[in-house]
Length: 110
Length: 118
Image (cartoon, rainbow over all chains, first blue to last red):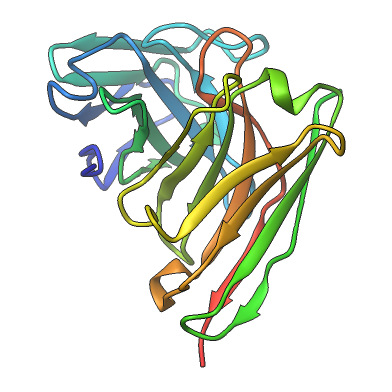
């Protein structure tokens, strides 16, 4: 149950697009289309912004999008906004019927 | 409205035990996938355990054999019994309910802090 691999930090200017990668193995990301993404602001509980690779929960902005190729999933934020500055975590269901999170990516809006 | 309220956190000595509770409202815990997720101070999220609607339970390797997830349907409450606690178990523990369309946690409580220290 090793954590999924994410870049420690990414940054972008308002209006730009950024992509956060999340790399796992054939036992998690590569096994199913069950990948999710969470946004967490300091001192707050995580918020689910993407599930099943590319599905957005009701109320989540359409400028978030998700994709997957092989053992790597990606979250793209288009039209970066100041309020997007947060920590982002990927998560995957595994072949052991468990879940695993990534280490988190700190997004800075310049 | 879905609400989850955790309680039971606190300071405990290494080797000790603690039971966390998560009181749910707005839905029935027995019909949903319920998870515990923790976050050590200044660190990332770590999935801890899940109980599925069929009562199957699963654990992270780091807590297997020490933690037990359960629920009391009559009280609509989720529990996490934590035994043989270690310093590295220090974290905010979140209770979470699944997304209606997938098993991923979508609805979260406010968290309860567990500190393991002598």
